[in-house]
Length: 198
Image 1 (tube, rainbow, N blue to C red):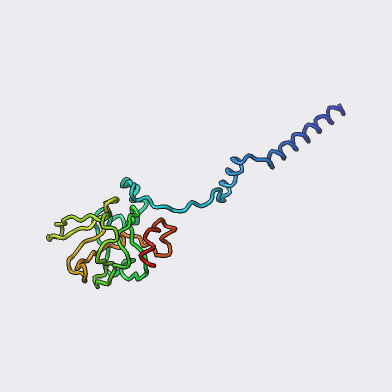
Image 2 (spheres, rainbow, N blue to C red):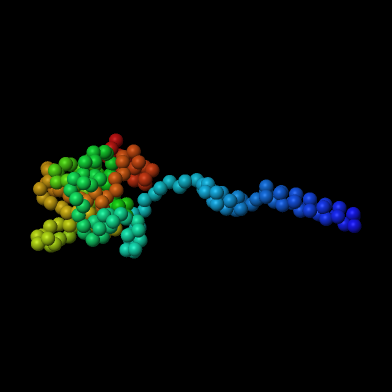
């Protein structure tokens, strides 16, 4: 009986040591899983890249979740935000403005001016190939609507009362835009536009 008890104790100690060793020598996959469960980062942060050229517009339900109600109303239903009460009307920082949905480059702070209308206004687009215009006959008048090419977002309207040299006023909704400061252009994936501010 005493021999049996000693054998059971020895077996228990051997199994305990084996389990402890296994816990210390976890596989890389197991270690990674444990780190994930603990909320720690397991992979180095990837540099953000912008791939708006191959952008595919999400469905309406996804857009409703990812955009604010105002951004959704403006970009998807041709809404207009209140004048003088929007994010970029008074923004004087250097950088570029991109589509809030797709990230496609649209305007530069170099071409922004204070039109006095209460909305961010530009004399020309940064990337004309990303701008689409069409006739807007709503509100009992005829205006030129401005939309983004890849996301088909409603951005605002184009008028011919702007300053020289273009004489144009691209009157945009802040809610349709995202501003990328010049110091963040590289890390946000817009490094090609850094030369504009050098």
